[in-house]
Length: 306
Figure (cartoon, rainbow, N blue to C red):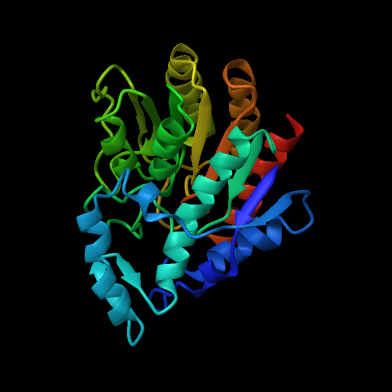
């Protein structure tokens, strides 16, 4: 498995006490230290790739804020801040996802993991939201479709918060399937089961607080997996958020470490059925450091062994 990351992602600093801090990524990297990966440097994303999702006017409108952040913290929305090191981290987080798709499509490996921050799945095409500035996984999906001439790309999002930004992209492009399990009610208040996209290419499986392992796995088995099989993706992308863990302070889904290992095994089998194993995961949420580290290790270890 390929692993894309970069030290610059540790230099994106929201204010002290913010949930999305550099210790999250460091905890994941420490947990993966003894696992076998082909480790690669995440490149800066090209604006041409970013602008498949985010219009040039949005991308350019961020530049004054990046310049201002060189001297002091800049608040982009109620939850999202940038600092002196943020611009490089943001561009490399998106670049990791694009490079991972390129490498997997070139046959360099069947799978890749992007250990990145800031996360991306809340970022709307023209709006910063929920710690997210660029939507890394959506950028990767449209890059796969346009640059590699794929016809069907699936995004599976098991972060406890609904990936509203990614759904927005799927709602405008039937070549993208977006499947999400998430807690509801919970931020951002989106992701209803009644939403189906353009051609049943949006699949939401909202679950109540306290749902637990059995209910979550049932949602995957009864809702997400049949949709994936019917769609038959040529590439699977995973928004791998680990904040559905029972120890996470921002939600109450109550999952265990083993649930993320189960997700790895299960999604690996789907990828082998439909796309010769091609699967790229990118880090989203997870805010209890110990649980995040264990869950990411369990998920990736299961992918490697499956």
